[in-house]
Amino acid sequence: MFNGFEQARLFIQAQSVRMIDLIFSDLWGRWHHVSIPASQFTESLMRDGVGFDGSSVGLKSVKSGDMVLIPDLATGFMDPFWDTPTLGFICSAYEADTKAPFPVDPRNIAIRAEDYLRETGIADASIWGPEYEFYVFDKVSYENGVNSASYRVDSREADWHSGEGGHGHFIPLHGGYHAMAPKDQLYNLRAEMCAEMERMGVDVKYHHHEVGGPGQCEIETPLFPLLKAGDATQIVKYVVKMVAHRRGQTATFMPKPLYGEAGSGMHFHQMLMKGGKNLFYDEKGYGKMSQEALWYIGGILAHGPALLALTNPSTNSYRRLVPGFEAPISAFFSLGNRSAAIRVPKYADQPETARFEFRPPDATCNVYLALAAQLLAGIDGIQKKMDPTALGFGPIDQNIFGWSEEQRKKIKSLPTSLTEACDALENDMDFLLAGGAFERLQLEDYLKHLRAQEAAVRNRPHPYEMALYFEA
Image (cartoon, rainbow, N blue to C red):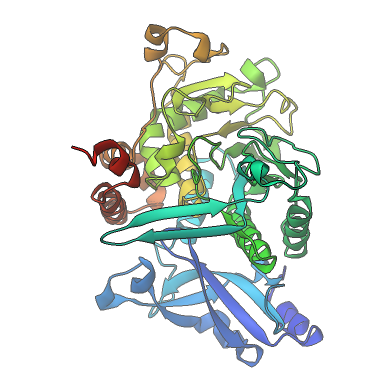
């Protein structure tokens, strides 16, 4: 939004801004913020930053938690959700003493990964297009105690309300894809979300009702450079939740909030650019993919099991990635096949649009880490010329669900549990250390967090176990 401090200062004066919101991401991708009066927005802020405790958000140990936030002026936006005129900035974290970029800050990791791309000479930019799927509910409740465990969500669109009488325009399970009004009762909500995103500097490509009958939606943005894609993702998630909250509803990007209904993913479209040219395009290539694109795909699929610890870092992620269903857990690439881990869209066949999408990820990831990890895997694939066909990753353009079980067993699979993904990352993390993007100790600490999360879920009795085993 701003090219420098003076431009930002003049805007603050002209718009009678009263508060400056400094926003940052923790290790797990959740936003936090600290607010200062507009009078404190000075040039010294850009030099010294605002202090905070990095240990409270997983970025540092308690004994040395002091860090500072310095705003990225290009990210400024007027926040529409506060009564007091507030200008928000996305920040990166810096060392409190030296003011050097803090290496474990997720946003700084994403910056270093793309810096490394340029250092290799392969390309000078990476372009990304995450897709945003989420559910909107009218009510949610959950409880986890010593003697109780339960959750319940409700949606006014769900056909479980059909027996109660009323308008009769309900959406059945798996029946929500591009649903039209009056079945689609969320158009106005999505339109309001999109309008707020555009006012905050995030362009919107389209929005629609997704497959999930009880309130599943999708919003898609155009392709962005890597850092912009990460920042835009954080803004999209914030706006979706806040607009729903403003209307008395609630939104979740949780991958699998409903049993037996469609899950929510966050597919990552991606391409590399050099001198303004799309390196992934070749008119004669498979799906118009160049040799560099195929090597990049080879890197993504070869490192796919480890990647999932960063792109699907929750136990709930693997309620969506279930074997035997049309979930993108099969490690192959394909032209238009949505059950493949990597899909080359048939409609993206021009020099400026040719790309592929990695389909397993979901929005429980820290988007900055997910972007960086995928880019590093692709770079490794190009550097080592990883031929995806020679590695057994396809392409497969047939309907694998029509294959026999023996045929399908020949296809390599991605992890189907958080434990499997953690094991894979533990055994395959060197590609993430290239260019100093990630640090080994950081990844080891990250894995400890994921394993503790998995144990906390595994060690609790599940409500369904009461039906299965109470009579034992």
